[in-house]
Image (cartoon, rainbow, N blue to C red; front, side, top):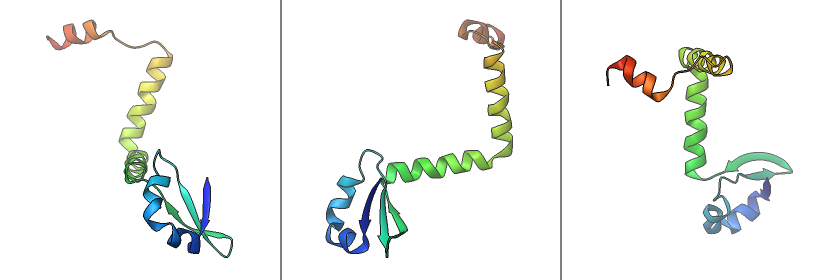
Length: 87
């Protein structure tokens, strides 16, 4: 992770979007303490979506059930799914 002081970040402000590209996070520090993160909007949105998924108890329960079914080979082929759904 790249670190910049607030002064460095201010001086490089117009270049920060390019530096934060490719899902890189830049830590901005003040007095050697991280106080802020600069990241691409795409990464930010992905993090928010991940937090929403993790906060949804039913979704997490269903996800864990699905992972367990895959490990136990309790899955159906796409042809079997279509047949069961009448497609």
